[in-house]
Length: 423
Image 1 (cartoon, helix red, strand yellow):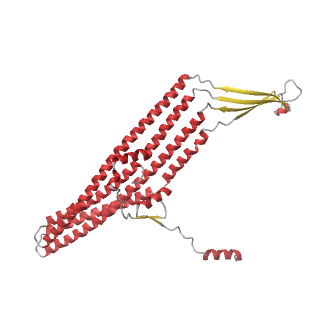
Image 2 (cartoon, helix red, strand yellow):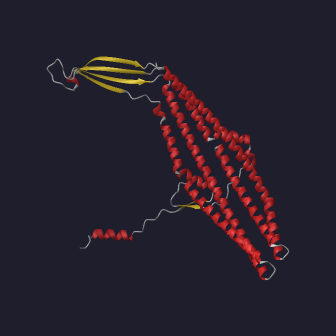
Image 3 (tube, rainbow, N blue to C red):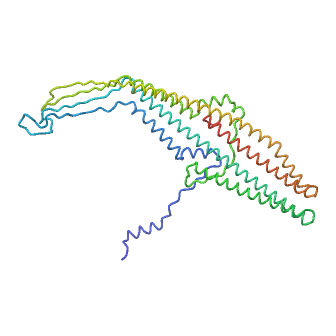
């Protein structure tokens, strides 16, 4: 059976059509700013915090709204007792029908207080969302700095390994010509194996840092991470004045803002509980239908009587304790933030001074010592132990330099987390 011409043409067009192009792979990274920009728009946890803050803001208007009115219908004498008619449920065919329309009215100020309580809840949720973003940004900055440190350490480790291989070649040459001992060549080979082990470990740590970064970005698909290219610039020393930083912390720290919103909410909640001393009002109107006409109208007025004094006083006591707890929690948050800020500023200063000492003194001296030891060893004026010691000094100096720069980035990220903004 031959296929229909239309079907055959469709199959030919489908075969000739080019395959759907895959989504192009996006390259991000290189600098921490591009990672932060990506995470702000794509990270699911931060998106959830924003959604929760929006949900809290949506609760403000309903909190201050009046309760829905109530409509009640009463059908009287539906059996038509006393008349010749049979039972019925239609209002014109029974004894009478009463319609009650009522509206509950909270005491003056209660609606505003409920709206204010919901508003402080929205402010707290917004502050929590901002705190969540700052925490995520801090983790991204720290992971970026760690990855950069690992890559720098790998570069130094490779240079150290190449240098030790050169030393090992010199030791083998000296041994071959009878100027050195076999032990020197064996010790050099052992040192090479140790350096190769360190290099493998550093490469593993670098791969782990890259995996952590992908997790912090929400494990995006079709995204490739560029290796870190450079560390962030450090702020000038004048920008690290403790008095100015403490003022910025008090004004911008999101956890303090959340505690402030909680205190405001507790104060409004206490005022709302105190308003329960006064009754709420319920107003109503009730027309009564007899057959096809409204025979009479009724007006209703009722209030709840706040007689349960023990219960009310317990609620007021609870509100006061909640307010006291919120104030104490804020003080604890402030003390912890100030302590961490002071520690981070001191740590940054120490790391800066350490980098200066290493770059201007320890590292150049270690390089000179190694070059001198190598030259002396080649000429037979120094033993292998001197070369090995000089090489280890150089490795130690390079490690101190890398560590100092990594500590600076760590302390900078911690300070920015405490003050709630970039320096």
